Amino acid sequence: MAATIYVLNGPNLNLLGTREPEIYGRETLDDVRKACEKRGKALKLSVDFRQSNHEGELVDWIHQARQKAAGLIVNAGGYSHTSVAILDALLSSGKPIIEVHLSNIFRREAFRHHSYVSSAARGVICGLGLKGYVLALDAMAELIG
Ligand code: CA2
Image (tube, rainbow, N blue to C red):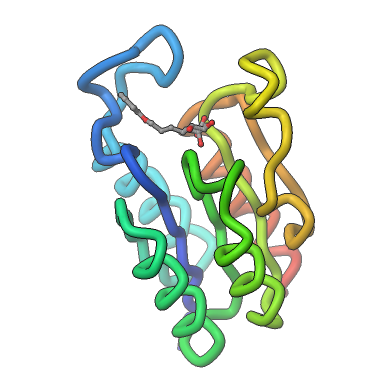
């Protein structure tokens, strides 16, 4: 049976493709999901792609991943910069984690330069848009392979 990778997306990422294309590009979150599912298929991984605007729901999904997933790819959106709760959940997951950001957070405001998620992640990809998710899946396939 194919290993499952959770691809978790945080607040406001449902708005992708509708506003701020100069920062986040023109692709929608559905485009990101389709690209992940396509790459997952090629890598023989089952991709479980989710988005929530609610911190607690993201924490619940990270807990669930302990039983259901072989690894997590996480774009926690704005919670990356604020959420100790998401960090604690990730630290307890016992699974490899790759952090992804569409934009290059280091070229942006200083408050985006720190991410709590990074300290739980095996690797971080930022600034490559949708491609960052696909690269994260490639890296995840190696990490769990
Ligand atoms: O670059 C990323 O992927 C971010 O995680 C996106 C977050 C931001 O808070 C992080 O600093 C970096 C924000 C997601 C908001 O996405 C929107 C997309 C289109 C229109 C409005 C918001």
